[in-house]
Amino acid sequence: MTDTILNERAAAPREGVLVRMSQTMVAFSERWFPDAYIFVLLATVAVALASIAHGGSPVAVSTAFGEGFWSIIPFTMQMALVAIGGYIVALSPPVAALMRRAAAMPSTGRGAVVFVGVVSILLSLVNWGVSLIFSGLLVREIARRKDIRLDYRAAGAAGYLGLGFGFTLGISSSAAQLQANPASIPPSLMPITGVISFYETILTWQNLLVIVVGTALSAAICYYTTPSDAAAKTAADLGVDLTDVKAEQKPTRPGDYLEFSPLLTILIVVLAAGWFYETFKSGNPLITMSGLNTYNFVFLLVGALLHWRPRSFLVSFSQAMPSVAGVLLQFPFYGGIAYMLTRVKAGSVSLSDTIAHWFVGLASDASVFSFIVGIYSAILGFFIPSAGGKWIIEAPYIMKAANEIGAHLGWTVMVYNIAETLPNFINPFWMLPLLGVLKLKSKDLIGYTSMQFFIHFPVVMLLAVALMHTFTYRAPVMP
Image 1 (cartoon, helix red, strand yellow):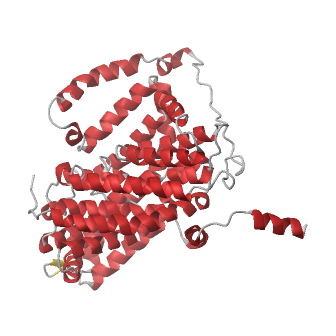
Image 2 (image 1 turned 45 degrees about the horizontal axis):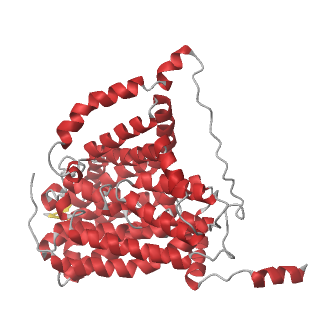
Image 3 (image 1 turned 180 degrees about the vertical axis):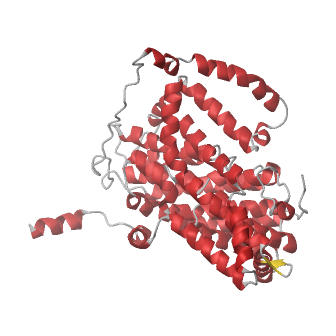
């Protein structure tokens, strides 16, 4: 018996150094890391104590927290609907049919992993919810094929690439969306940043270069870290059941007729057609979609049309709701933190002002400032995995420092976007919906996604810092 075990261990492929390191980190995180909500509470308490230590009175700090708690509710709802709209589209029957066709394209298991990774990144540029769910379903569909041997873990990790690198560089970027919308920018932030259009953030050629380089890098990492067919662990090897159990949807009473008829869907789409035409008849459609309300309305409208029948739409909406629980719970705390940072003052200086001066003191020029912002945002992103909510916290002092040192405001937003998502590769917070689709645990994927993090971070951060030299500073533009 002992000889058999020793032989099996000797025959098993030995994982690489980075994979073994990441597994050690995963084991530590699973044992010691609390839910992300606990980090939000810790951040709230820390900022409150820092504001008092900075010279603010406890009453002023408490008042600022209470007043700021509901200050970003419109943005909170908008970001929740970004996720819901993406899920609805990804779960629609036509998209499911498209996914089945896409699953037949790769000819090898290793090629399939690369294919899933590239698809995940490209979809995330439009909507991270679509990317996450479509990629998970795509992996399951490819895993059903009998003609290739797919490493289910590597493919699942590839399906997460859009959340580690990609979604904050496209039109679903919460920071870029917020800065492009006067109605979404908190009153405390508007005087510091003004309105920053997509032409200065995601639609710059510099951002396109980062996307191209990062996508190519991701694909290469996928290719060289995917096990050979002999060492691959398929879904069957991992004990994952790939059978989809679908509840049959049929009307059971006369009152159900309209739920299973496309009549009302057609009427609503016809009703919205005039709005759609007036909204998009002139100008760049991507700029038009920079309005979060417009963005969300389009996705909900497209989702309703793709589902065709109201019952299918309602079911997908319900399935999407768990994914936004963290947004609805945590974002109000970010609003309270932002107010404590900017509204509580010692004399005429807020804690945000002091932190901004600290950034300026460390940075000798815009490039050094960009590097510091990137490192800081990545570290904070590991503990607060929320691009939009965390931007509310960081923006007041980061953008104030950018103004003082002469760093381009739009590219400062993009440096934040590039760095902030990378910790998602090693923090499984946003991985949870994907894990539900794949029926895996975070430890199954993080061995691969950690390697993406270790290689991505130095490459894309150096590129982001170098590109700051191609911009010139401009003062905030008020609406």
